[in-house]
Length: 146
Image (cartoon, helix red, strand yellow):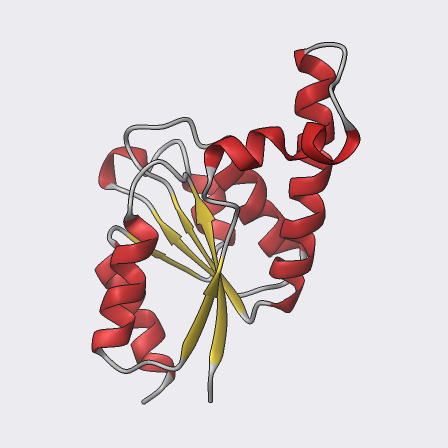
């Protein structure tokens, strides 16, 4: 009964590593995937493949195309998605990935602090489960194996 979980959310801290470590400590059979965590590689992948672009708009667009290609494949393969919304960073990609998961009918665990209850109320309503911490998200995954 292994699981494949796509970890959507900002890439600026180690929340994914924390979740993976806690899952390993519980011996949960989970394969985790997610967005490219190397920020420079993620931003520059379009130019790396297609060459220098004439301006930032085209640089961003070519990079987004390659990142979306990767995300589409990984999310389609995933059994479920965890989308983490935090306090510190803009959450555009997290919101997009959560919306994609809902559109794909993937079970979605939404992690958001109490301060974001109101701004994320519609997304929370569409999620399968909403929690406030990665530890709570892990407990939901642990319950699957019981």
